[in-house]
Image (cartoon, rainbow, N blue to C red; front, top):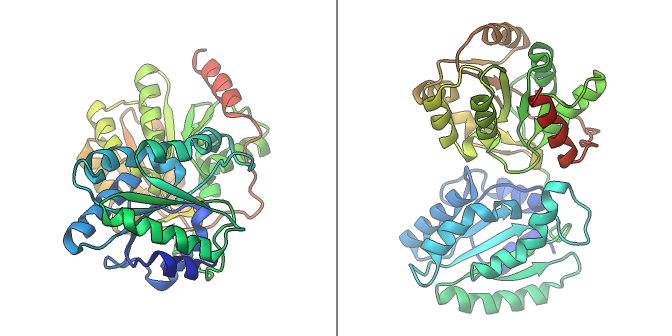
Length: 372
């Protein structure tokens, strides 16, 4: 279905979301039409934020908002859907547009498989009526479904369109870029050179894919790395748990700006515990680059000041490779909780591969190495 026709059919003009590659047509359409506009389109830190922001819009206007998300974000919406939106509480109507990663029968990555299996069941359990939009779905069928959905929305209920692979088409091309010169992959290569045999916990998305390929190119073992292929926003907490449990090992966490924003409270917990052996690195390209490049709000956030306020004992930012090398050597030699922000460009190789080891195999060799 053409994205413009889909938007016309649902009849909404207020959207809050977390980008998804399955919803690239929607994201590009919204960025082309509205950009980031508080009156029409907001990119939130996490899916729960989306629901709450959209609820505020409804309370202020009486209109029905749209929340878009990847199905991996369903877990983040359960609490506000059940305890805020539900008709037994406030009865706030909302349209969800959910990208269906890991749809049964459609090839996808390991972290999406189980989430794909339970996607429709989770919506059902939350009392959200859903309709699966597929590439072969006719426009008039969607119009009929939306007519039925409007009755439910008027009754204070929530509905969802679950978007199958390739179901939305026709979006304009949108160029996403910034002015930084460092690339994420080259920055990770510099981190690998300095970290040696120290364990690295790497965030989800292309960062983990690049780390895996750097190890391959260096003929190094993958036993040093835990690749957080799912659970976006939780790498720093995983690294905290490891650092507190292994105080004699230096632990590096390679994080992303979208991930750091998604669960920023983790930084407060890390700062309060002050593990002297943890180095937290946020690669900030001001974008959800792994799912298409839609901007985050990280260009307006001072991560260094946040880290210091949270209790990190050392925090700095770099935007060139020479600055990066100087800071990496400095923080490697210190014995305190450190934070480093790397300001990088929005780009990656078009031929970037994916880890050839399964997540279970990654866990096994990583935990075996940690116990030595």
